[in-house]
Image (cartoon, rainbow, N blue to C red; front, side, top):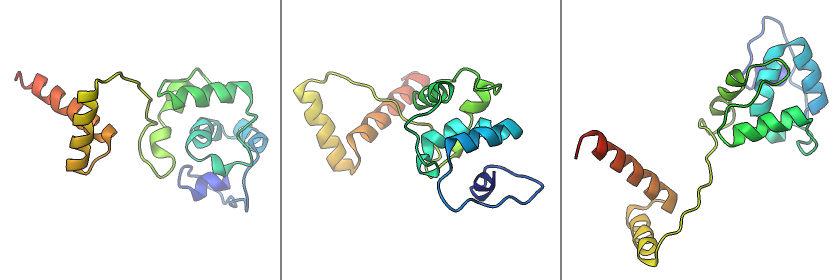
Length: 147
């Protein structure tokens, strides 16, 4: 709980020391059995700040499923008594990036489309993904305005 206090994710009315090194998942689960807010944060921490833990390779099955759902941008099933909706609100608040994980999409573009995408990215100083994002937003705005 000390690490969560140090990260500014958990407010307590008692002092809790920040452990010196990485935390064992088993210790976090034990702390969560005493303080449910730890369980609420745990899947998001494993997803967004895995270096906080000794290892995130051999997760318990229920924790693995919750992390996988969050990675996909889905609402996970309940995790050890914590509703999935409560779990899903934490990824944007954890870590340096204040956003939800992105989702991979694959599209088949013609050579002309690829050339145009590269030209736009180069001239605008953006990544190709950012050009696509801007294009989607511009199309949505035009549709909403009835253009």
